[in-house]
Image (cartoon, rainbow, N blue to C red; front, side, top):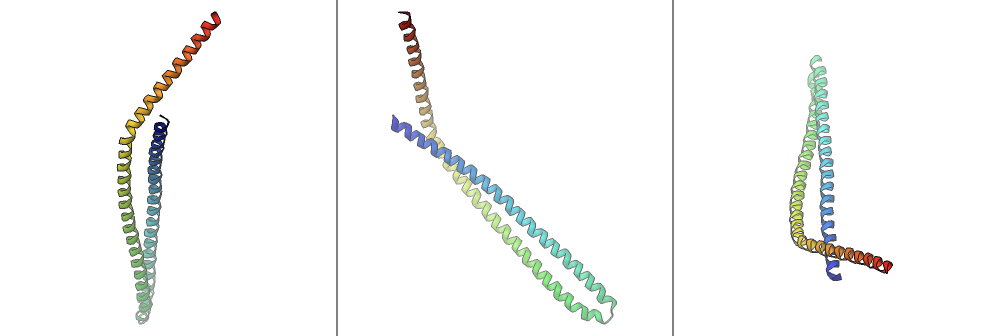
Length: 164
C-alpha cells in the first residue's frame, strides 16, 4: 500500500512538474516573441530613418549642384558616392531584417513543434495518471470514512464509559 501511494505521489509530482514546465516554456516563448518583435521594429525604424536621411541628404546636395552651373557635375560625385553608401547600408539593414525575420519564423516553427510534442506527452501522461488518481482518491475517501467511523465509535464508547 505504501509503495502504491509513493508511486502515485511520484506520478502526481511528475504530472505537475510537466504542466509547470509547459507553462514556463509558453511564458518564455511569449517573452522571446515580444523581444524579437521589438528588435524587428527597431531595425525597421532604423532602416526608415536611414532612408529619410539619405533622401534628405541627396535633395540638399542636388539643390546646391544645380544652381552652380559647372559645379553641379563636380558636386554630383560625392552625392553619388554617398547615395551608393546609403543604398549599401540600407540593403545591409534590409538583409539583416530579412535574416532576423527568417530566424524568427524558424524559431516559431520549432516552438510550435515542441509545444505539440509536449502536449502529446502531457495527454499520454494524463491518460496514464487518471486511473491512478481516481484510485488514490477512492483510497483516500475510504481512509477518511474509516477514520470518521473510528472517531464516532470512540466518542460513543466514551459516552458509554462515562454513563456507566
